Image (cartoon, rainbow, N blue to C red; front, side, top):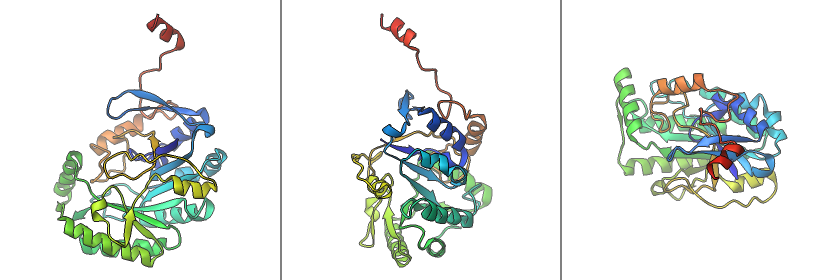
Length: 306
């Protein structure tokens, strides 16, 4: 099984101690976000095909890379760098620091390890199509030779995203909007050509309607990439986690509402104060990222099924 860590939160940036503790233990527990039911996830090397990390700051894991490499499993880092103003991204690291980390991953781990994400693309009075053209071109130039792929998507305006964007607009005096598909299709094609000029393929995550001849469908959890890094074939079925998703099957070990980066457009956090409280209260020695009911003991199992 491929372990996703995690599209629900930024485990490398904020929960790396918990992750390494669970790696040593060989298992963790995670709550199903729909049913609330907890389940045990096997993290032993013989049960893990590879890891996909999702982050805006991999430094805490880079500092302990030897421990991760000792696991003997390939990993990919889906690394988001957008370079948006602080009005939209409250607490992410500077783009230059993130670029440096991607370059280190490319050299120190594998050229296919880091995947740049310019995701999501948000339209506002501060992030216009012209802003995205200039900003993307600048970041692509900085990352030339360090990543073979850049993943993009356009912001999905869920109810929580709308609330947070409206709050940011009121707080900072900006305006945001969700333009017609024609604007998005044209911009995606332009960005794909810019990426190609820097040796990168632009792929589009879960939004096939924005594809053009210059782009391709993203596979963020990609057994093919993990296979190339490992140098051996890895058999994992395709199983996306939402409509339009082309990923291979994985198991995510994160929790929603736990990332304190404070990005106004984030689909995974209802509000930053809640995420900050959960981050400060989490137990690095716990078997789950957030507290869960204890597992039943064998004795209680016998009692229940007498």
